[in-house]
Image 1 (tube, rainbow, N blue to C red):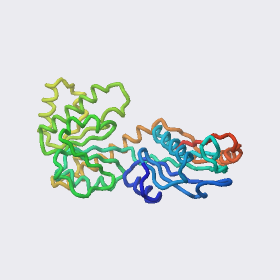
Image 2 (cartoon, rainbow, N blue to C red; image 1 turned 30 degrees about the horizontal axis):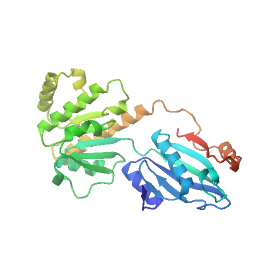
Image 3 (cartoon, rainbow, N blue to C red; image 1 turned 60 degrees about the vertical axis):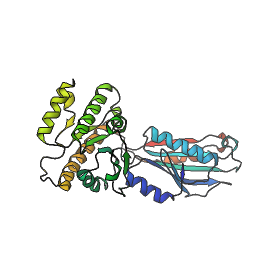
Image 4 (cartoon, rainbow, N blue to C red; image 1 turned 45 degrees about the vertical axis):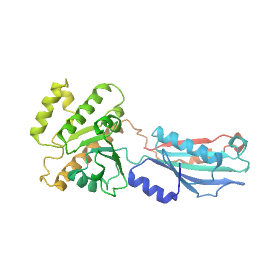
Length: 310
């Protein structure tokens, strides 16, 4: 969907939310074209901002950009588009565009509960480049304004929504209700069990539960009665937060949880990148630019040169 926001503000907005995006720049043109060099637009998985001229050219660029986002191919893509019959445009010129795919933050945090600790937590994690979903059944508990990277999810069934919301995400259970806390733990452990052996993006990256050591022991016993093994139950961290950060005030607890989450997110990201390319060259190389320049405009195809981010 086209949004009424200039490209530079869209970039800042995506960066604040930690949302992956592609910045498209018209590098060079020949003949009659819709927009001049340096024209830009921003493309996300669901929206577009600004324009490089519209028409089928823009449609093909959006298609190409979203394919990179879907494949998590972050880095550079240089493409050439002749504006002929194949694109349904009769300008007669040609356009070379640079697509810069930015991964944003793949850290996704789902917070259940909008009480004092959760509200204090948002003042900290709302300043981090994470994508945050904030869940509660009580609409009145959410503040009127939330950070740009926070999406409020009001639902009358947090436990029922939890498996879908927490796929690939770090889950924090901070609700006001012990019964709901237990149901959330139960649902998320069931998700681990059902998706065992599948892609890790199908299960929560981590599960944290607020509470005392006594609460932790009681929940462990109840979950064992439900048939979960000790190994499965160890997927839940309770009490959540850093033990070396003292204090029981909401902000002190929030700082403790934030410190723990920063470490977990960094460890999770490092693990994902363990198999990434070890190539020493990064960015577009001069021979790639020359190769694009040499392409025949009569081909009617977009000829791409990709460089994976190192």
